[in-house]
Image 1 (tube, rainbow, N blue to C red):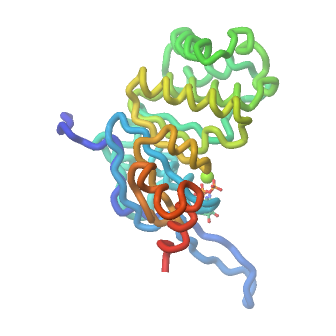
Image 2 (image 1 turned 180 degrees about the vertical axis):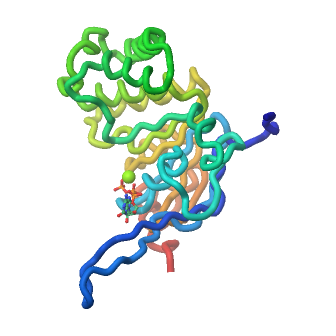
Amino acid sequence: MGEATGVAAVRVDDVSKYFRHRRLGWRGWEEEAVCAVDRVSLTVEPGEIYGLLGLNGSGKSTLIRMMATLLLPDSGRIRVFGHDVVEERARVRQWLARVSAEAGFFKKLTARENLYYAAGLYGCRPRQFFAEAKALLARWDLEPERLEVPMEELSRGQQQKVAIARALTLASRVLFLDEPTTGLDPKSRREVQEAILAAHREYGLTIFLSTHDLAEAQRLCHRVAVLHAGRLVAEGPPEEVLAGPGEGEEAFFQLIAHEGPD
Ligand SMILES: Nc1ncnc2c1ncn2[C@@H]1O[C@H](COP(=O)(O)OP(=O)(O)OP(=O)(O)O)[C@@H](O)[C@H]1O
Ligand SMILES: [Mg+2]
């Protein structure tokens, strides 16, 4: 199937997601629906680094999980390079990878073993896959010896680099990074940010990332959006969205104070 030129890398149209929460009420346990993502629409252009900001519980991870085919939207539509993430899930999956703050590894296995496992799982050639990831990691100052010790012996920054290398080796078009630098010290954070920028430069991937770090959004992203209680309340270049009466943090607080849901 051909793709029209000018097709968006990711297109989210009017997407909502509800979760059922149980709570103890007057008549015993009651179920209530919580709207985690509320009619969100956005477009990410090919080759763009797009950042998502928002408080804890604002819906960032839920939105990313829907975009990455891990969760079904209740309404609306998401397309990756023109293909529907629900109807054409298998196809879309071949193009993307996701990294979350909690990198999913077998902690007792080495990075090499984890990378071989990922290759097998996704039907890639293990040796080639490992060689590619290893080459990336060497450039990000992770010595090859470190790939031979159990993952649990690596620092969080090192683990995150392995996770990003794994994702980059898997993703051919779009990389979803859900808080890739949360919990890292300033040096590791900077290294992971450099790795993201280098990956973007060299692979030309489209990158969608969520972060709580406004400086990170300003440094990495071409555009950012602010999600508040599931709704998109601002979008644009970081220098515009995070500008205004108070720069950075103040601007962010004003956005979620004045433009929140009714
Ligand atoms: N699997 C789930 N089951 C029930 N409720 C969920 C589930 N996942 C998320 N939620 C709810 O959806 C809302 C949005 O959560 P989400 O994890 O998307 O927020 P977030 O912006 O990623 O927050 P954080 O910054 O803390 O990572 C919250 O109210 C949360 O309780
Ligand atoms: Mg989250």
